Image (tube, rainbow, N blue to C red; front, side):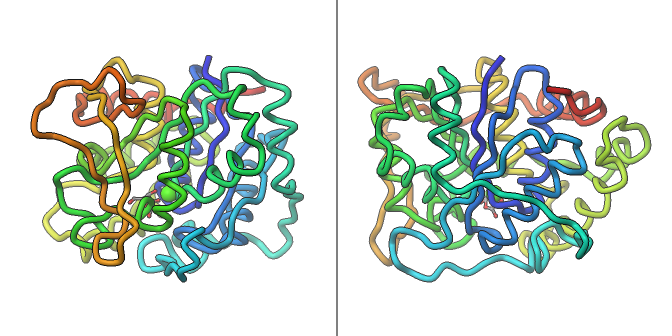
Length: 313
Ligand code: BDR
Ligand code: CA
């Protein structure tokens, strides 16, 4: 069982990832830390709380993280992909109320658990801040997983950069230099982790999950955005969902061990730099880049998980 602190900016693919994590017997979500990214920190926080409410898992704390990147630059949100408020067409009722925990609550979570997996499917600002403010919490962490980067392939927000690492490259470098083993799920793999409408229809018809009625409308919203962004795709890449699959199945994927650095220069901001002149592993590097996976296994695995019920505590 992997105990997870999940950093997220829900976000449609974040929503799928959170539901996957809550439905996976291999994972136990101990907290969700929200931050700016696809939407504002406030919307991301409400969305995470709402997802946990629908899941019946209000016992999991929602911790509020960063509202701005460490770069000091304004970062745009992406309403055209994830909707004005972040979960596509889903309108959270005005009557919905929740209580989020302050950032310092991370201390409580890390003091209660060992061997945690810190998993970030958004901008890395909050995770970097947690290591900056409370460096000793690293003793409670086994591994870090990040969705981000694009190695020798085009980016998705600039010609060379992927959105999460572009959003706060200073923070990503801080996490990479934390001394912890960091596993990366870059666009090289997530771009191919495509769900097709037929898969989501299966879920809409057969899932035992409380998200059954939500899966198809949020997927279709996301699909429409991708039809404009990247016309001609057979399915739609679920970057964050893939990252949770990677966390539960690293042995089913191809990983290379190399040092990674992120460009903070204006022109190349967010570019992921690693030496790929050969495919040799660098045994001294603390970074593990996922460069390939078995698509059939991915689809089978995520359908199985999302068909099932939310796990109880
Ligand atoms: C990443 O950026 C966000 O828009 C998605 O939620 C994902 O985490 C993909 O580049
Ligand atoms: Ca995300």
